[in-house]
Image (tube, rainbow, N blue to C red; front, side):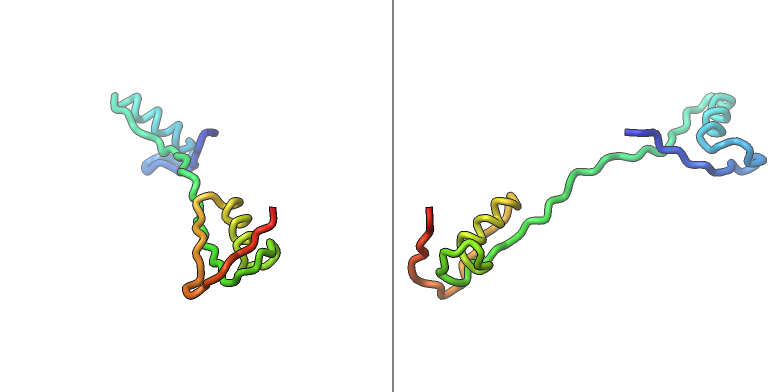
Length: 95
């Protein structure tokens, strides 16, 4: 990760010195340590999806079929497949 640098004049200064350099110099004179801002990397965020099976079609190109929902859920791990309420029957799947 690279260095994060801001340029801001320090109050009471002419503005000729960059902000981190001014903090380092003043901190050395006073004997105190100053902290510089640091950027942190955040965790990746994953959007989970829900796919609904609404018909008994075994066609993987039909957006409401089980094969389509399985293909989509496999490409988005952590997703959920739901079956529409009242859906009854057999879904014939091709190998």
